[in-house]
Image (cartoon, rainbow, N blue to C red; front, side, top):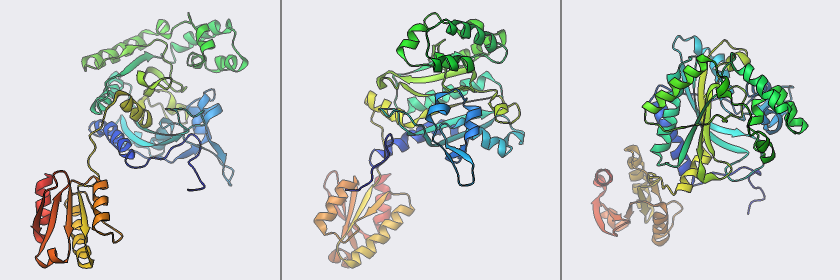
Length: 420
């Protein structure tokens, strides 16, 4: 047994379970690729300051959860705890917003890192697929992203998830609400850290998960009662567009995402079968983030969906994904000449798109057929010296057990026809 183990709070993806994660990533990405979103990939680490400015200095992510370090050259870097700030930084650095085609629509998939107390559904290394629409203030964009996420989940067979929706206002109306909320929080019995957070960003206190804090927040002023006319109209159009698309949602006036950059539309996807870690994804509009990190005004909206938690949600609902077979044909050679011939057949099968594998290591017939069974292949090709002297191989149906002789020069076409 190895001396080393995966670090605490992390996990390894290994076959066959890893196929589920690949299928989830593909299902989430598919509607994005079909809607004008191009793929982007950013480094696994960025400047600490990028996240401090964008995510927010008062957030738990920045104050407690980031893996930060200093390089030999003195640069302060952090493993990325989320994707939006990195994607926007990359888009600005590449001047994508100057290409004359706004919004810039991007999607991404990758690993993210937060130092948290590990539990089921909460890991220190986790995987997300995200999407960002940069450079346009349009309720239809907000609605589009919510609809695409809903479509992705339903394509996987998920049904028991809910979409929570709220508006966080903008720079016109949020300051008024902020003052009212700070007045309310000032009258509560809160610890020093929470009171300090209330002074920096009081909305973050609403997101506090502790029961003793939540009990005191009963009767807190709600942002929806302070929205300006423009924010009310914007939010109502988002609601109407989602409804017209047949997507169900719940208005949640207390919904506050855990990042400081959100404005106006904010939403979360929750699954009640996951216990305390019920959020499987979420996002919203972040109209001021570009300016926060030194760019021009670029109103934007996006989301990130957790691959890990989506897999857990599928398991909670008992959904079995229809995964393609990793191997359709398994070749079993008996003797050196058969190894040469069947290796060539496997190579040709792969060229025409048939998933094929080979009995490596010089196993005997019994051991090689066990490998064929374990591979899940529908067909096995078996050949020995006698078969080859007659110009044939034996094609065995692994489900029915039926076995027929097929000429060597016809075996590829025969398998293509059988496998459709």
